[in-house]
Length: 257
Image 1: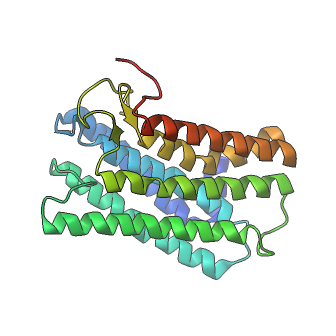
Image 2: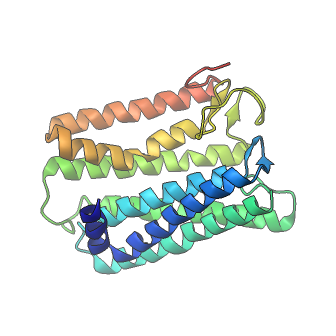
Image 3: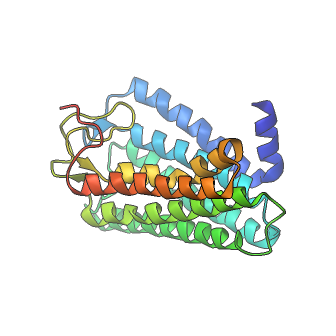
């Protein structure tokens, strides 16, 4: 673990520090969830900040690792600050709203909240587009010498991430992530808070975006082959698409009640 943290810091110090800040924030949010019983849409108010901070920490460490493989210091420097500013804004706003017992996403109850909701959407879109641009650089001579199967897994991971990150727009347009039932109520999966009674668009969002980590790790440590990596990427994308179709039909991934 010490070696991994040290290596992450050496590969991309700004994203490493940002990732550590988010990891610490996630721990704080877990502790706050244990001492407060404020609910937002049927879930503890600090659950959403915890999930976002943890997800952003993992994303920052992951992209910090990948950007080291690019011979494009200016682009990587701009990307680092874009991630820190844009996603930092999201975590701060979500946590402030949690502390006030107010919705962050889908909150259009006042002009100010509507404006901040739009800003969050813009921040997410810009981060996703910039990440997609880095994915294109992995098709260029800007990359360092790496095994072809590993480069392929990074490409597939990034573009699957981009596609399912934009799938979040469907939730924004609906102002809800639940399909076939009310936003509040019904059985929920522990911690994740996904609906176990109705369709939940967050599942495909989660599965698809984490191709960013799953595919390169699988390719590097297990598959070590171009054809196997390509097949794994295709099957993973089908899995994410399956969860999306199931959610759109109003069906839960796991039915508990």
